[in-house]
Image (cartoon, rainbow, N blue to C red):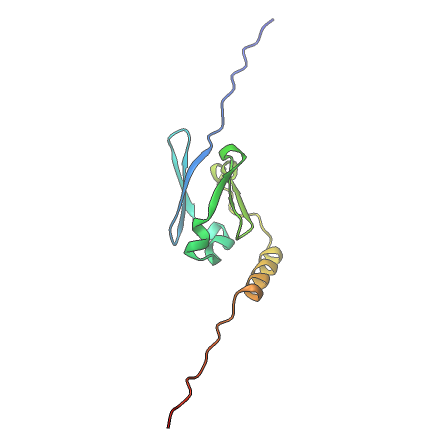
Amino acid sequence: MNTLALEIAAPTAESVTLTNDTLTVELSDGRSLSVPLDWFPRLIQATQAERKRWKLIGLGRGIHWDLLDEDISVDGLLAGRPSGESQASFKKWLTARQDTRPKRITTRKARRR
């Protein structure tokens, strides 16, 4: 007996847009998916320049930010899952990030008399 298997392809990401409070992903099936940026603490902590440096991975099944060591899957977004990172992991990342940021050096101009 032959059974017909119907395979439905999961949509993939085609583009990503970030604002100060929203992550929007354009999907291959024509949908746009927007979620609160608060779902992803590393993206909240990122600068605009860091947020813009994303790339699609896994043939569009995920989004990766090298500078932030952040990966977000399309399946997770479709399921409505925010970041699964533990508070301890995020705190460790945040501490390391603060330790590696360049320190501002202020100099005092010499007074001329």
